[in-house]
Length: 361
Image (cartoon, rainbow, N blue to C red):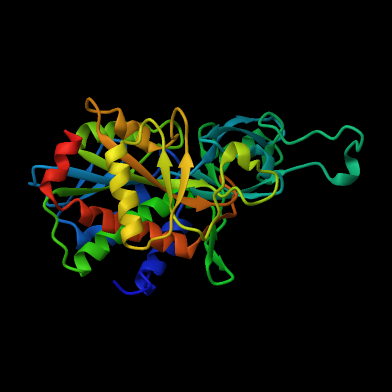
């Protein structure tokens, strides 16, 4: 493989894919973009009722291996419209209420996107001795209407989903910044693995199921459903994990992870030891830098859903270090993105030996 994995077409797709809104439960448009990009590199697609999408290579093979990311982003729902035309919200996923004040938002309606802002009292008007912090029950959206009737005439109603419009950009050549890198980057990276397999004419003796699951942000629901559909022998999941090198994070609790130092291989009960060892051996043999993380009872990712499905599926987690999770300025390092792709790609090639699957049965 060339030293640099990502090309102009890859980066163009990444920008388009990230800039498209795909909140939990409304992933359809993003999935179409992803499938269109993946189409030249797979034999067929599987989709399910809620929108999980799977590109399949070698669909008739005896053994099935999943590589997986999730497609949804956090968002808000309109929960209440006040008489004076302000909107109050509830979370759709783990949206951070503390970053909301002064953010511009997109409210998705049948009439298209309506712009609004999370308002907040001016500093001059607040009681400095006991300032109220932003909380889910006091943040609100102003769409410029004088009353509830005017809001409803715009097509806004309870249940409309709300996203942030913040778009993709690059800092200092190597840092990718956007909302929803968690985990649109996962879908991007597994698509790049498929592209590399195709371009390098690599043939696998098993079926490869490139899986972009929905509804991870509200409880791994899409992975639960699609795992039952595929019934894989093994699954390599990729998600993001916290960079712990920035202020106000205690490394003794959160671990020692930093962007730019490589993918993070997880140690957790849901991670099958033999599959994880194949991954770490692959990293060492191919001189791919990597980090380690201990995740205790659960990984909190789709790894858990795959691992405990179908009477048990050998599963592993390769994470992408990320700063400022669940904000609109999530940040990852380009080198880490490329090394996650390399590690998944090389690990799949290591699985070429059919005897390997005796570990996972």
